[in-house]
Length: 434
Length: 177
Image 1 (cartoon, one colour):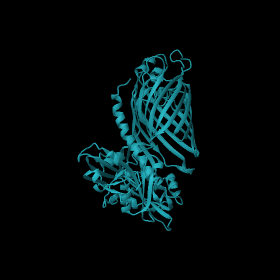
Image 2 (image 1 turned 45 degrees about the horizontal axis):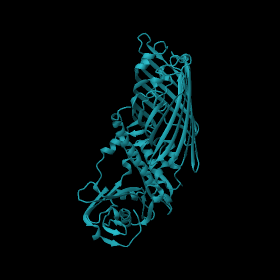
Image 3 (image 1 turned 90 degrees about the horizontal axis):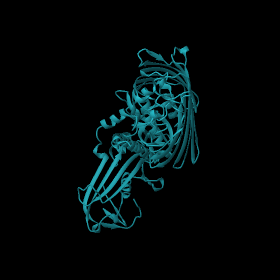
Image 4 (image 1 turned 135 degrees about the vertical axis):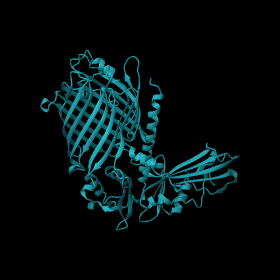
């Protein structure tokens, strides 16, 4: 059992930010009681300029549509506060506040979003954070800015959760302004990501390597341009390429590349009922590394996942299945791993397979019960990762784990237990956006 | 302080907390939250109260009618209580009327002191720090770097000593805080 002292700092940090999240819930409740909800919105302006009169370069298209759609609707002050936050975030203002004034008739009002500009238009954020009592800290720190509706993000990452390796380094990302408009989203978006990481390998991985045909690398970098198409509101398709190069730890191996064509398909659909809200989500990703793109590695990696979630009253149930297969020889960073903060929680990935595998199946069932502003959850994970032909090293065994946690907004704390014979060591996790 | 049936209530004829920044925000059509607390102690500087009443109020200002509306936010939607078409003074009094202490919590034979603490909650203090992109450190730094709250956003009143038997009694109004 890990020492309670190890949980103290992450626990205190998490409780502070969770109390901020609770405050936001209360303020939303306050906004919903506003007496001006009875009035109809006659016009909407930003910094005193009506939305229709604002130059296209000043306001993203999706935000413009949302603001225009307020006209003729009842005044929802909670929504106006959300829009103020969105304008501030997307246009990187210091403050944005909504101001209501009398309209041209006694049941109508005008809305103006008053803005205060920043001296420096940079946002520094902590988008992901995780403490795992087995794997230590994982986190990301980003600085972002926007120029003519194009987003630029620079980040530093240390991740010991997703792969067999801990990768630490820098990231940069460019996301263009959208082209075209469909169902409240941009029809086409261009993104280019750059990553440069240094790796740390676990002793178990190093020990299992001999005779495996796999290569450990000390660093890797990647450039990945991608075009995302919104086919319809619930369906997006992204196509791109990824030029990834690794620098081997073996003196004679030198640099190796995994240049690939990529495809990501995402489907998400919500069914809102009076008492029952359901959500269906499906994802498919394909990565084909080929020598035609100058790649040293040649392989095809498929990963599919499906999730169903239902909410009724205070209860939530969800089930998520994922399965993947790799044909050919993939580098370590593309091999499948179980035993992370989202798969077979409670298991140590190095006890399952320190090299990862080329086949994976995993299922996660969760039941949640809302308590106050958060949700108490119980979960059951089951999964297996293996490599055909290497069952003597790592047999394809179906493993199970159980756990419980508390979730509030983007924050979660959980304790997970592997189901196995012998000594059971629980894992404590506290994180955000995991 | 006065006794109203089984409840102890606070009465302040000139409390006047609807002023300054909160009233500016209200007249912009925004909602403003106030958190009120009445504590009863047996000595003037005690930090452990023998009785306490805490309530959260959501205020808004009707742009056309130019009158106030107030809701006491409870643990559940059913426990909410509201009033509308109020003047500023009537709104302040309504908030005080909804901060009551059960007289059974106060010892009959001891003197006690009363503290009323009212604070306006600034939504801009918190919104925007936590969202889909995680924790926005720029906004967190801006929040802590801001000048401290101006005194008119917090009101603290102390009075006493009182004895339960010496308090003025009024007819039962039937409102439970």
